[in-house]
Length: 326
Image (tube, rainbow, N blue to C red; front, top):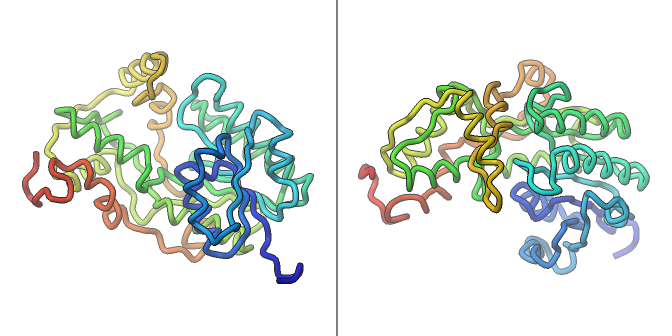
């Protein structure tokens, strides 16, 4: 192999996470050399078999320490930032991880002359009442001011084997006699398959995305919160009542749960704030081709994938007979 045909190097921040591991797989299939930047490389060894021998390198990096970011990016042609958190804990605040951390990655990419793809979130808005969405919006503004050609991907709720949405409610249905409909369950989502998001990242690295564009990634169907829970019950063969939970009460419960130490809160006040607005692809993005379809990707149906990993929540797992709801 000569220097002229050595595959480009892509640094992936957060490559061991839910979305990141699928991004690493998508890039490995394309033949890129991949440097996975994570806080604990010793816990990310499961990524190596996703590529050929030596293709995937693990390095230590923390978005709070700029020097580690610069070292992880050095020599890369492309940078992908998959880092994000769903709730704040300890030193991991939305501002430190999703705003200042993302800005630091963009600064390092610019200094290295690398192109950047950043995974944000549908609903990102610097003026949002949600701390999560506001930090995502400010990060986008900072990134595009530094790298006007950066590609930003805004997925709706992402589903897949390790997701924190359908798995959460399937687990609740296993132990609780009812499921909560926050705000009446009317909020609309457009769940997007994690492998479709990873493919969008891959195509952006391939140069098939519009430079400087913000893509809104939604799945094949729009579902209300209630319809999402109904799908969970259908797949897991369970019957559960729905209890409407007003936003005010849900927010209070979330704020209390977030203050309990040493547990992962099932809900936070900020997440309740997010649920007050629909999470679907805008008509403008559709018209301008800034969607999965615009990247040539056919969105995957929720119903075609959900049973493959929610089967574990059935009473007898894969051996549970259809039609016998518990």
